[in-house]
Image (tube, rainbow, N blue to C red; front, side):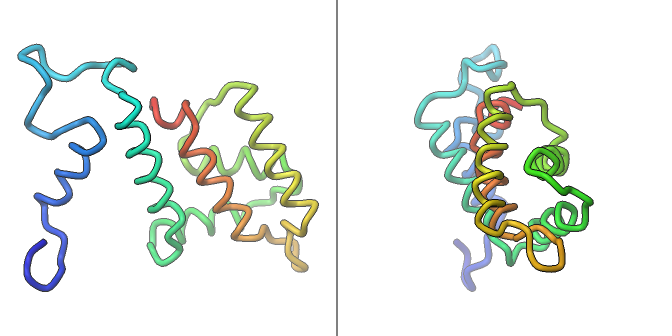
Length: 142
């Protein structure tokens, strides 16, 4: 890290390398692998941890905008909240199993007061869904 603690381009490039995709350093003369073959278990854990730490940072202006988009929607059910989160983060197509798990997560949070008194969606619910979605197989493969 340079003097003053500012993150430079080299540090940003290294993050991709830690997750299995080094910029300007393909794994072979054929170039980078496509599809799922380049995702190792270590790279997957690094990717999930990376996105989870960033998507839950409410000080990040981009995350604030994503939360506002979900919160300002007219979502009035667990299904609608999940659909809005998927749309804001993608749009992302997920399997029925993943969708059901996300809806179950949203239903449990909504049962515990996921909607605020003014009808808006609790930020903690949105962040939980964002983390679950970004950790999903479908998100990691897109």
